[in-house]
Image (cartoon, rainbow, N blue to C red; front, side, top):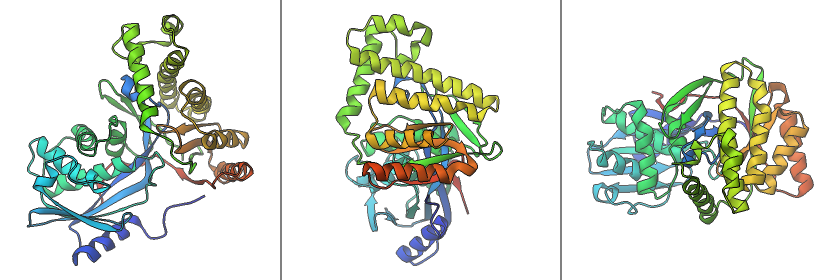
Length: 390
């Protein structure tokens, strides 16, 4: 397994700021990546999700600047980018990783705020391209830093919408609000039960340590096959099914209505897509009920059922993630599933704390036998959302 880097991420951000600007930052702000415990492709169907914040974080070292341009240095990209108000005001003018930073400035201006000009340095140990919401972590950390530097009064409940707008409207990524909500609103030892229609949240107890459990996060390192056409096709299928069924969204179809709803749909592919969404929403609710009752290990079969639904009905898994799930289950995991949008990314497995290393080893062995690129893994306990560190 792989753990956090030896050098603290805060020190890397501070050192990067000092190298880039010749002085120390005014403060440090951090926001986490996330894993979605359960509830996949339910968000754009007005459904339910249950993410929690990872211990992996993006840290922003920042200080106000008296000039007219925002300057940002990235450890991962190894470059520095500068942009002015005109570039920040026009989506697309800043591209690549820096678009997520410029997008936050743009979203704040669009919302009527006087955004402080700043110098920033970014370091992160949230893996890129693994489905752990590195972009949301970046947006949330930058947003939190700029709000503090400018003494801007934005309620925490309103912040995910600003971060999402940065990604949708400036960076051009049509994501839902789950990732930003998790990165900003999560709490330690809790999962965030989010209603994607009302945006109401509940902090659900998920104290893995007290239960002697761990969530093992396995990065499949599968070549990411999440092509836009596949995602769009599934979203279109869900939306057309809702129209055919006469409901605002598939969230409005209950499991007791599922058979009747499926009988009204002619396309077998669309029927499978609907079955996944409806049953997945039910699995989220059942998971929340078990967590409220403190029965953490008992959510395992729901996680596994979620994966099999993604594999068979929504058809968004790939051989690497299927192999990781089956190997983890064979090695004694209570449950395992792919997390994220699909076509690659990460698997999470609920295990006894002492079993994390053996399960990770079993997955690595299964990968070697299949000739896959070796996976990496780490254990994750629910951590805090975006915050100032100092």
